[in-house]
Length: 167
Image (cartoon, rainbow, N blue to C red):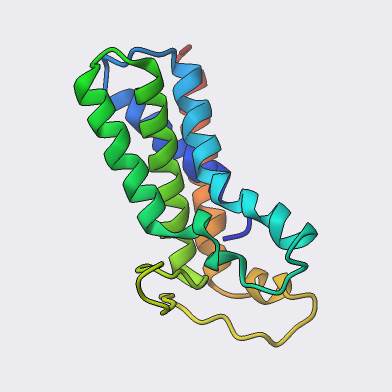
């Protein structure tokens, strides 16, 4: 995914706001946590660019391991269960769900090591063949980019709905 992670976080958190009425935090914090979580796995790009210098596929880093996000979700659920009104636990859960959503979306056309660190095997639903330079052009002209545009349009539609209702 190139452009749809942030909008996907908005979609996730806006639906959570609709479904779960008794949250101990403001709606704006829920939206922020979901959107931040949805882009958090790509913070590893700083390491990839400035330390690793592109030597390792950035999806191999721990920030793209589903086990990290599932572990954070489990921790946040346990924390939330122990302290029902904990705003921090609620925000961590929403943030972690955003991170897990990121990894799920990256599985569409990006390699994800689903069983890392135990198994060194990457998985992707679709293979995008490298034919053009720069590298991102291969994704932009592939049909999977339509999925990204659809997610962006869906997020915009949700945002317009929420703001037209005066929320």
